[in-house]
Length: 429
Ligand code: HEC
Ligand code: HEC
Image (cartoon, rainbow, N blue to C red; front, side, top):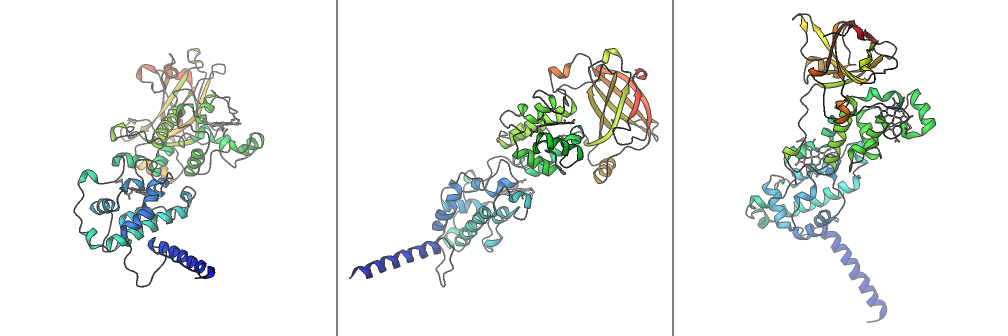
């Protein structure tokens, strides 16, 4: 045999090897091919996913608790039995298997596409599709006995934790916390407003961290350095408005006020979710049973505040008059809080409206701009005389802190220049 033919043979052999590997991996169609060997497909295409440090496509929506890797056992046979016994495989129509549906979830979600490259999802999908098809064609595998329940492979966390750690749940919580309080910040921070453009010229794009929608704002914040998952209470998102780190907008939060509480609760929960620190259902934060919150640019002010309130934290709850019952409603329809400007004997801030979840009021405010009808209202005033909130941010003021109440008649127009005002000297018990 001369040199040329042996080189040619070697080349031929190498070419056949490549082809065989391609067939085995299920990438190349092979006419009249015997069914692919499921063990081989598993080893070559599923195990690499299992061993990869990269997140699977599931993280687009599941920040913790469940991952594609959790469904894979080290052997192809046990992985098959585990998926089959959990109803995640359709052996008669392999392409309809539920595990494939899970992998395809979010494939058309453009926002998520930045997180999970289409290529990665496609690789997962094709690997599982090829392996399921090969396994379903193997009568011995199909007939394999049930896997003991303890060996079933699935989500690492209980279903309550999996649900809590979903991105749509995170967004819902963001809307009720950071987003509901946006009117305390948006004048300066909403991207594209005239005021924001001025500040961007001065300080750079980073001032435009508030976007047009809650989802876009949350996505920006998650990718920014404004949230510190290791020490959430030290996040710039909290330190800046406290002016604990020098803030161009001055002090916008007091420790323990409604804005602070909302941001802090969101940040702490976010950190635990992304760091997978909720091991079980009972470690989750209690579901927020309180009213839905709607931020507004409706302002209320108290004039001529007494010297005893100077520079103290004050909360005002607004109660609507119920004409049918001839009484004030039992729960406040709006609330806000802030420090009194002692020097000016003035207290003012914008209202957060609130309505029970599912109520007609909540539905109306979800559909249109939240507003209060013209009528009689009672302002109940609470004063933190002993600075309790500064000592414990979770504290809330109660009846012992009530300074009294004052009635107002208002149509509650929106805007800083159109405040509903009450004389603080008329606040009585
Ligand atoms: C585009 C978003 C999205 C992607 C991507 C996604 N899921 Fe989900 N997943 C959801 C939603 C929303 C639910 C709850 C609604 C439902 O049950 O259909 C859910 C529910 C689940 C549940 C049921 C938990 C329960 O509440 O009972 C499991 C298990 C699950 N997903 C696993 C996965 C796995 C594994 C992947 C990746 C292969 C994945 N998901 C990818 C959005 C997604
Ligand atoms: C009166 C205008 C104004 C208001 C209102 C305001 N800020 Fe700011 N903020 C600024 C300016 C100017 C900067 C840029 C200078 C700096 O970093 O302090 C800034 C910076 C920030 C930053 C740092 C952004 C970055 O990426 O570096 C955060 C976080 C922030 N503000 C949070 C808030 C929050 C939360 C609120 C509402 C509770 C708020 N701000 C209200 C003017 C304002």
